[in-house]
Amino acid sequence: MRNGEAASSATTSFGGLQFPMLWTGAIWWAVIGVAADFVPGQHEVQVIEDGLMNLPIVVLTVVAAAFPEELIQLEPEQTQLLTDPAAIQEERELLASIYAVVTPERLWSGLFVLPAIGPQGDTFGMRRSFNGGPFSHHTGLDILAGQGAAVVASNSGRVALADELHLRGGSVIIDHGASVFSGYHHLSQVLVVEGQEVAQGEVIGTVGGTGLATGPHLHWEIVVHGVRVDPLPWTQAEIGP
Image (cartoon, rainbow, N blue to C red; front, side, top):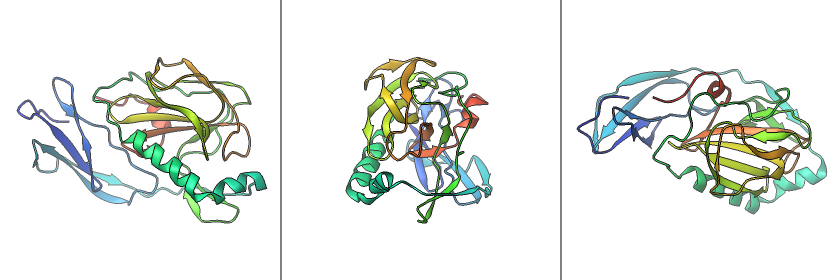
């Protein structure tokens, strides 16, 4: 983001949070995520080098989005998944611990690819209500591929999780380095193991309807420093220095 040859470490500050920056040999850089519910307005991006904060290097304007709304009525067996707060909290804490890991190198290259073939369903940010409850933002992109269809790694990286989760069902999470992760959920089969290195396009599982799902589909997420972001821009422009 700026020349930092004199600094031994750097972080960037945005939206009240600080993110570690990576050194490429020429610049310090970091990817910043903006969640669907981020407060609109102008927000400063600052860099902290060796513990000293510099002047803001840029001011970003976050605009409000008119996300569509959807009312979803769940079957009784699916509704039961929402009545176990301990299991929901355990899943939330597990995911937070995974996304807190910082791999200090970039493992991806080029554009990300869609991980399954099929029509797009619920989009990122859509406001959804289950059984008349409060609305919450959809945190990824649903791809309406059929039961058993192949799911591939959207880019290269290392498998950080390959397991069955309470709400997300069969799940694979790939660490792409630089605090960027991709998540693949509701899988019928998980075909990789934790710690395995995967290449873009490699089959990692198959589409299913496990967990809190109303039918077979792939729920695909991109997570940056623990913030779930719209995955589609990652397929349209290369992210990184």
